[in-house]
Image (cartoon, rainbow, N blue to C red; front, side, top):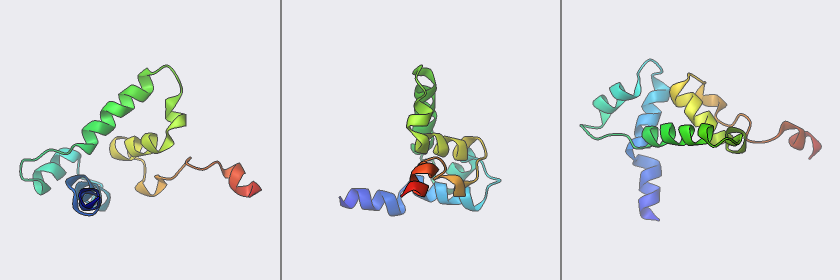
Length: 97
């Protein structure tokens, strides 16, 4: 559990994601070079591979996994980070509650 907590609060993916959001003009390679001293990000590579898998499945898995879709769009397509929760909850369900 301690390893998970350390990763969430101080891991390189979190650290670089924070830098990405703070300075939207920097790309991932620049952020890696500035912050990781030669190490590589794992999260961005995983995000790219997962996105390919979701698209190649033949099913509409982007709709089944909207959080993965949103993370990809923020990281690689310019979606605003504050929209990360977009589509995670059906608005009609919220209104009915």
